[in-house]
Length: 422
Image (cartoon, rainbow, N blue to C red; front, top):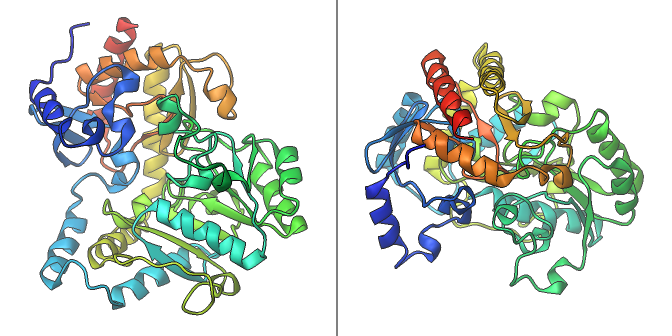
């Protein structure tokens, strides 16, 4: 396979390296795990991104999930054009925040009150603090390989970027920060039931998305719900990826399991930085200014983010949306299978991961049996043929509402060439 040349990106990377750590603002963007330097993006539209050299790619990264309506969605842009002249940030309440919280509460029955943040990581931080305040307990249970943001207590056996870089336990996190973090394998209900005794909460992605796509075993989520009810621990569902992605009401709607605290992000801001966490009224009442548990954010409820988020929520309520997302995800899975790539695919709806392994992937241990070097060769070949996959074996591929037959045909052709390169 000919080398995929990106001279303008290469020059930008050299320039970035002088002023940005590693030349990037988030480690996995460096593309080191797939054996190349990063590709700098100039613009995006619909299912496509264009790099700084003008090369167009069918985008299956989708900004790590938020571009479910497609990049530069016209309705979202119209809402932002209307909001921009009114100011970009006030540091004060707005009516749009109320409308946003009302819309989320109508879709997620487990959320009676909401607190907005500026990122999913902030939402998780607030949710954990709230769980400890509401229960009077300190211990938090998390899954091995589960990633919930760059938060000290949760950077223990974290997946995603930490796994990609080969450092699951981050230096700089003091022992005291993880003293109350209990680890259990994903999909191991018995281990979770034991760990939950005396714990404040378990935090889990209902469908893991940061060790690659890993689905819950039948009865696993319902079992966690029952175990939390028995032990008095709270069930925190990190739906930063799955919220509005797997169904309008997220994984909770799809699997019929209610969280005590829900964390949201990515999609709910229409591509702008935003997050939120919510719960029943009695739990949320622990938060300041109603209660003693402090959480704050200068840009929380940002008027641009809420404008974009309201459009996204409304757009995802249109008839047929989730049938279309299911179909696009299934079509991408079929294209990968038909290409003959030596992979095992985990998919649910419009999120999937091809693993280069013969092992069934059900948890972090089995996910890491995948041949990351093979994935790197595969990803580089796809990039060379106009397809933009996640730059890590341990991330999700996403389809959106603008991925159609033309993009699928281009993907099939690129896949055939990528398999030849293997």
